[in-house]
Image 1 (spheres, helix red, strand yellow):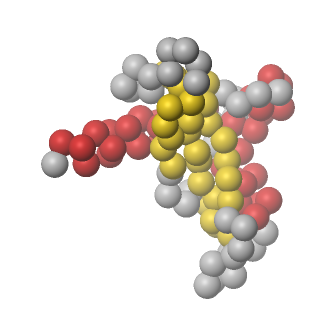
Image 2 (cartoon, rainbow, N blue to C red; image 1 turned 180 degrees about the vertical axis):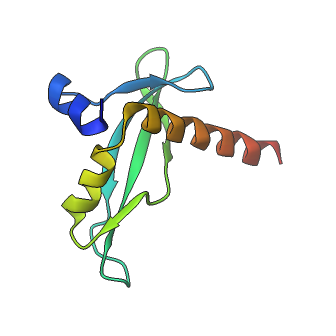
Amino acid sequence: MTLAGYQEAHARPPAFEGSDGRAYTVGVFSDDDPGADGRYGASLLFIRWSVSQEPDGHLESDYLARAVHAADAEARLGAMTLADVKAALDGLIARRDARAAT
């Protein structure tokens, strides 16, 4: 299943348990304006949730897709498998934790 397929089937963003044991939901966002190369970058935005179901943090990926049109860049991320999205989340958590340890 893909990120966009999940959202279409369930009318909500998918939720994941991160490698830190916390709950996260994910969305796709793109730049408002193209970069110097004329393309829009798109990234994953993970919202972290508290036990009381309030947002209490977030993680953002680097640009994972670029395209001449923002919608095309976002569609490329929507085509990611849920397993790849989860791997991206866990990679961001590991990178955050490594930075905190230094």
